[in-house]
Image 1 (cartoon, rainbow, N blue to C red):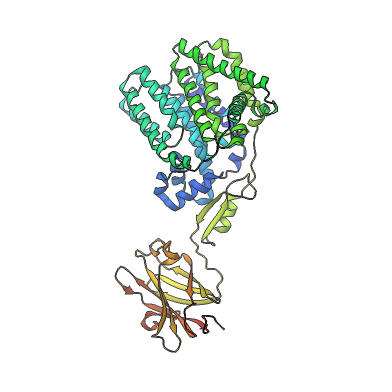
Image 2: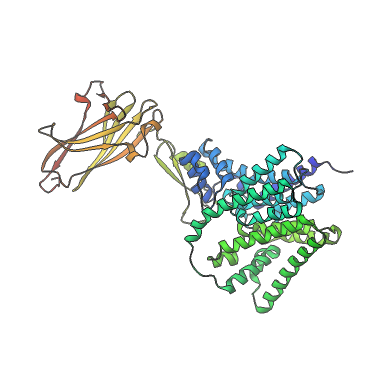
Length: 543
């Protein structure tokens, strides 16, 4: 009895999910950000909005990861890590679903093994639930696109193009993997293959354009022995995981590992070409091209090149497993499949890794609504933390103030009070404003230092926008509290006693807002006089 495709798909999804849980259980019961997820993707989406979708990072775009972050910016902030983790799991499910479609002429049991290989390959566990690593994982989709059957409808052709663009703009590996689509067109000579090749080339050029800026900042020289031993360690890690580091690289061991590497890849390539097994040839080429790009990117990081088991060499590991699974004579290779997968599954580097609890929900709950800017640590393995997610929390609770002094400007701007400190050179003020309603216009305020004996004598007048223009009033939420620091310099002020006056106006029409005190009595000329005496001696100092 042959099992239906949907049942094989469910078994594969269940198996992949079980392995992911075994490798990173904390990602399921304690979702949290990891480094760039919070510091770059979350913070950019939160502050930049739509603009974050076209903001490159580390020399290339992360289109799909940016879309996830942008959507997440509309969700309650305490659930942001949950959303990111769900998206990371969903990416694997999408790849498996695509693999089980009719676009790939493999048996369902073989598709099951190909899907399982996505999570049993040797790689650091940080690969799987970090959106920054989608740059690597989404490259697998390019490999699948390069070997997929021709579309049988216009809708499928559009799907292929959209998938190529989204995943290609998410990954720097498109810089080298566009050659796979050139190979596809050379083999098939179809219009669709030509279009995919041209589209992949366009994506690669876009990514290369931004990669120039990154390359310009990298310096140093990588010695050949480091490059050679890095390649040998990387190949050995595919089979032995972290235990390869216990093998001293003598001249004999180097020769043996190099011979094994050339022999295995040489045989698989020769076998694929002899049998005209173009999917195997394409997949192997993809692994080699991605490894070459990774070696180039890591050329100035010898320790990372030698010992990193993370995302940089995930694609070579997966493609080697896939090539072994896709060879023609499956009976001959079945024992090797079992041995290879067992090695990968039992490798020390593949054991479950539980990360420290960063208390994201607790930290955000303590900060949001009480502070104007929250900085939450997001990297769970560095001490002290160096990666932070920033949240503009829109404060709705008034802080403690030195002087509670209520006044109203126009319909929706309230002064609740202020803090003031005077030193030898300036008066440091911190106004506490509150919005009593949503505003359409961007108002500005004037602050004056006037002679106490002659209020018409103005010695300082500053025209200011809230938070130095960074937070216009049209962005204020109803009942939001805005803490706004202002500095009045005193170095050039003649000796005497002065008073501080404050007023708001609409710069678009040049009309000052009416000002009222706490008892709703209108201030003279709509200027509010703060109950703060400023005294300056002859040198600009206060007594």
